[in-house]
Length: 125
Image (cartoon, rainbow, N blue to C red; front, side, top):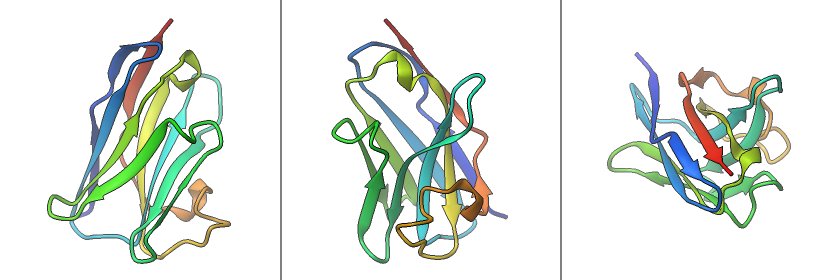
């Protein structure tokens, strides 16, 4: 049974850092992504990584502040966040896709088959 479990969310002051982890069990995937959803807004793309290709993608809003990485031994995917601001406040979701998604569709949530339950990140100003 496939499970994605996020952890690491919490309350952080503006300008601070936070690291989110996604523990993946059941199998491995070719593409992992992070999305977020703020109250009253659509779920939006944050970051993706295509492990077999060896590249990553970041939304423009987080470039230079966030990084995505994977620990193969632990089968976890990490979203390292820094210079956080109140616009980063949201529930963050980990997602996984069987296929190596193209650059055009990796930011699109409908291409991911499995999702975690989400973890809340709140940035206080």
